[in-house]
Image 1 (tube, rainbow, N blue to C red):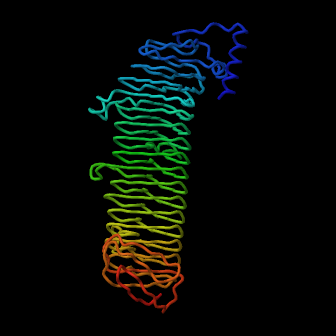
Image 2 (tube, rainbow, N blue to C red):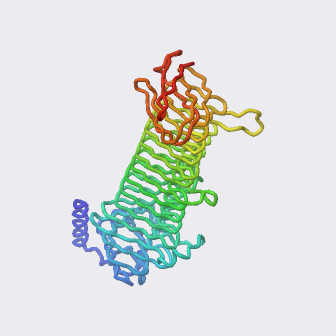
Image 3 (tube, rainbow, N blue to C red):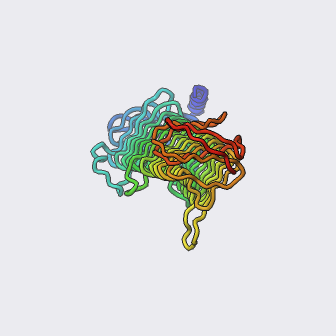
Length: 490
């Protein structure tokens, strides 16, 4: 930043020595287009003065408490504006605009406080150590929220990037906190967003690669909303720290939700019978390949409208009224650590559940792992649960494994308890212990390397499968105060 400022100051001095015309205050841009390089050379300052704005930069038109930026370049914004806005409209003059927020407090009582009408891209850079605030409406407006009312605190018709080393508080009392009609990138800074409707909403995509973002929203927290263009409509989280408290979905993608890294904490509090309040959702797919994820939702904790894949990461998922992990086609777990507590089914796919790796601990108020459903027009139910590797521990109120067509065991370790026992097919031996037990019982298989598990619900059977077993081998189970014996079969 210091190097950039030095270059800008030097360019400014050279221009003044060359006899550059005096800056025009309060006038619209001249007819001749201002080149991007010329506009970026001097750093312009927009001073907010309570109920007015001062700016001596060519390309910035000031009308009372509204400043309209009409030329590409970099602009520093400082001071407090009680009721006004910063508008960016380059019209047909292509280029990017960068706003350095350095102690800026902007309120617009009736509309968006920062409004991008047209530019190639708007960069909001939060100056190091600065505290900034952007507000639409007042707290009184929040009490009488009407979904038809427009005016996100920050509204961008084109691409929007937010970065830097400072802090920004966004208060959307009229509607959303941040709305972007194209691609939104969250790259850095400390961002606190409160909104009566959606916290952060971008039409075409949201990519978060850094920074700390805290969102409190009356509806959805962080979302993309349009799949009109090919390869758009996604939400991708690569890094940074994201915390969401929402009345609707916590994080929602119109197409794919991709989580590659970062730290994510979501609390989705709502009524699933009235509206969607899922923790993490992707309408056309969900991929988790890293990160630390902690979700508490009244609806499903993790939901895909198509395939769902988990290959790495640490996931702690809780659903108070719905399912833990739900996929409309194939659900695949090949790695990572997954803990699920759900009022309904733990892991469920309308087609196939395939587990080839990872550490899974599932406690569910209905079925633990469910694969398949009865297809319309078919006499038999279809669906498979396939366990090929990993370590899977399941405690369920109903069936620990509900494979509509078949349960296939070819590897890995499975310890499961519930109201009934699964009937497996496959290559590895298994044990079945039939005896009643209570929630809270410690279940321990007397076999070297075997896992232990605490029963979350009362149970009538305990099932154990592991490649370390041999067919015909006798083995014991310590279940609470009981010691039970069984013989391995294949």
